[in-house]
Image (cartoon, rainbow, N blue to C red; front, side, top):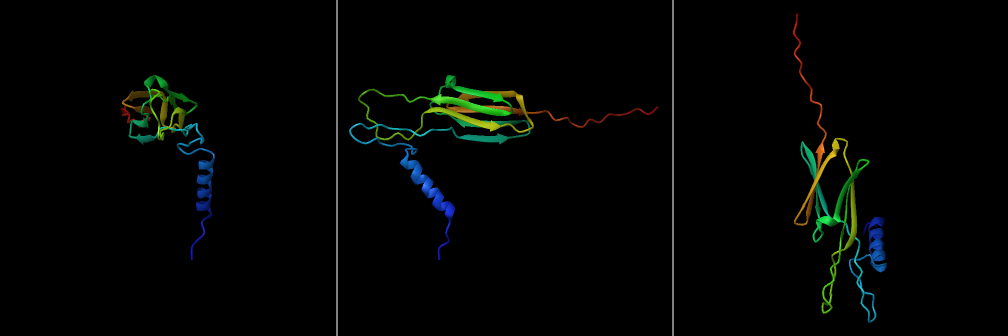
Length: 148
């Protein structure tokens, strides 16, 4: 006896539908003219924290530093930019294009203890590091009172 899982069937249907309308990484247009379409992309990120800050690492291979923008607005940190497709010389034939190109945006809600005024970013070797400092917590102070 096999248990019916309607969600599995829904996932299969969605997968078939997206490949039908061309959301797969690459597709051929058919006929003599072969056109390649590339899926939209969003860079992969890792988000970590320690006692002092949050660290967001975003993979941006073949993206120029000038094409990356980091903003904070209304408690949301956004990373946006563009990876352009560099067409090779006319003698080049493409057999497969699986990497995505074009504009991207990733947005993240900042936690309550993040200081939106203390955000820094550095970009090196295709890796963007965004550091968001945490708010300094009011530490309990001990005040000695002199008894007169």
